[in-house]
Length: 223
Image (cartoon, rainbow, N blue to C red):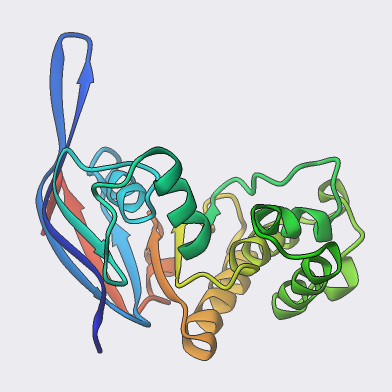
């Protein structure tokens, strides 16, 4: 399998007061196309920082990140935002749904950045909601849904533009065990049946078991 993501000698430093803090120390990592990877480690280990770099939410201090043949470490501003919109779907611990919009309208949001007509946006959202098992909840607002259903809507929003890559930050962190199992089974299905490459940060060993491979970060190093 060819590598979808190639990370070479990546470091990330932040300035805090008068101090420079290096969060990642020369990371090298290849993630094949179609892989499902779990990044684990204690708080402060750098796993969310690495996830944000992979998803183009941040840029490295040094080193290179190539995703699907494109160097993203040198992109910034509008170019990076356009790359994210075209290539990456995001799933977070807290669902980040707009409470005044229906499930369908929440799922349509990423498509507002495209030139699709209103009818085509609606059809894409219907397909995504059906894929996550919520066709019958399309008109419901977030307050009318359970936590698990809200996360399913968030996943539908993440996949509605058919991205190459899904990045998930603690996707089961706010869910009970049974609901977490449903969400992880859904992610596993998207990986297995629809070819989505998934990179997931989790503290939960049970959630990590659904991934094909697991990596441990400790103090900014892959161990």
